[in-house]
Image 1 (cartoon, rainbow, N blue to C red):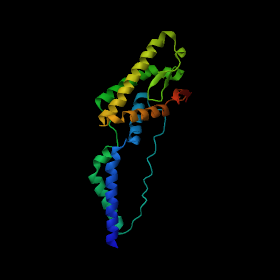
Image 2: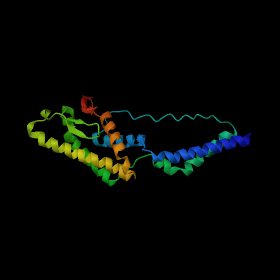
Image 3: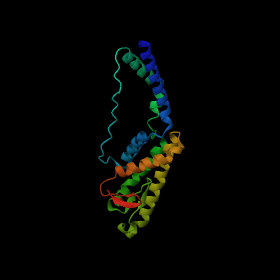
Image 4: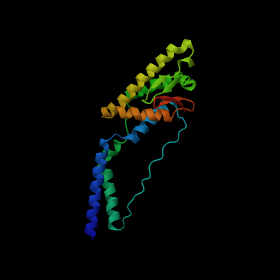
Amino acid sequence: MRRLATLKVLALLSVLVAACVTINVYFPAAAAEKAADRIIDDVWGPQGQPAPKPPDKTSLLAPAGTQRVLLAAAGAVLDFMIPAAHAQVDLDVSTPEIRAITASMESRHASLVKYYSSGAVGLTADGMVEVRDQNAVPLAERNAVQRLVADENRDRAALYSQIAKVNGHPEWETDIRQTFAKRWIAKAQGGWYYKDGGSWKQK
């Protein structure tokens, strides 16, 4: 009986190891959101949005005796064997290239923020910005606003590409862009405009 319990725990350990190794093949959506929030807070400053709560990791197993000891040992083995798997969960957004792009966006935000607030410029569904209403911009400022928008979009495109490349998965660029697009809108101030389904909406 005890041998059967031991075999079950070893089988469970094998499954856990396989799962931990396999999961890194897929796009880490939660890590991408965390990275996006970090960068957006750097560019815009905190928008007063509460940080997401970590998921409840309450165990579904309540082993006793030998099984409890074996599972504790299995946990220690997992922590020792798979540090790289855990490390890969966080996306690297601290390279010099990414910091330079972020700094450029942060300095530009001081000029863009009044146009977000007036509704002249809005956030798009693909992680970019767009002139929504040029009539809301004084004639003398329109060329400057067009340049601000073009420069901002250039930096945003470079940011999404760099994050994907730096983390060894250029194919993630589209997913990263989509993640950022959602987080820009989620963290935008009240009154700012964003595109949803091809139509402008006010937050």
